[in-house]
Image (cartoon, rainbow, N blue to C red; front, side):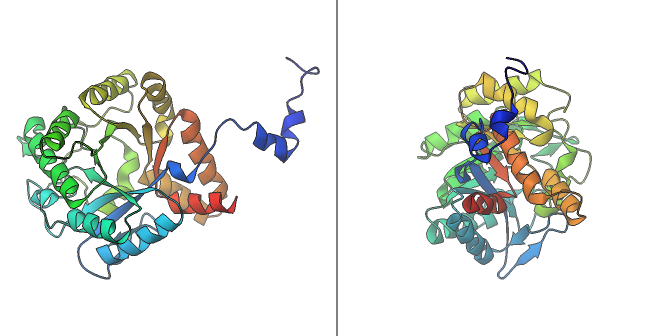
Length: 325
């Protein structure tokens, strides 16, 4: 069909028709809101590089989680800022650790909200890497045992889902076996299956106080230039028992989201990471963009690329916009 027999503007010309033929939809049910749990009481410290995002003690986490639930957002994902750190990240699997206490309180006070926990060591280790460091690098297999202990402690506290983000080989299988063997066969795993060694994580490292103290994470996170490796990584996690597979970051890797969506029939999540969020906030503050319009366009881009779930710091704003209609 070509002009003049076909005129695209006949449909585009009226809002009602644009809505009727819209190919991609966004719902509040697609959203997961990340939160940062800290020790203490009455703690609510704004992350300087992430406006409107806070490190919060459990009392304030609960208050915001209630707001999240009332907005219709179905789930949060928790990251912990421990009271103390050591080379093995032992606070990560402490029964009275910050995440464990926060999960218990959230399930008690906001039972209708699903609580997902990030499973990684980087927030808890004194060196900031995602596992046990030996000879200047992370020891993959030694780290698996610690990740299993962390995941089990989260499940025991009441987490509804665990999300390993460490990128150790074999960690999904190890965690699945550990959960199944300890009475948590019903706890799903959302795997950070395709996680790139990205420059977009900078603000998160401030928020989670997780910057590596030496080197970088390129020996275990993926090379941004690689596409086929992403499919191999996702395939391994699917084989090992992942229930949801994630691509992280989001916007620079929309092609990878689509590749993963086309290749696998599991739910696909995407993480709209801190750097993406902060850039939008900075540009909006300077009056360079229409924040609401750009945020909603970004969410639709994730859905159009094939994501079923979107982890985003914009979740509350998106929920309000959707509610407004």
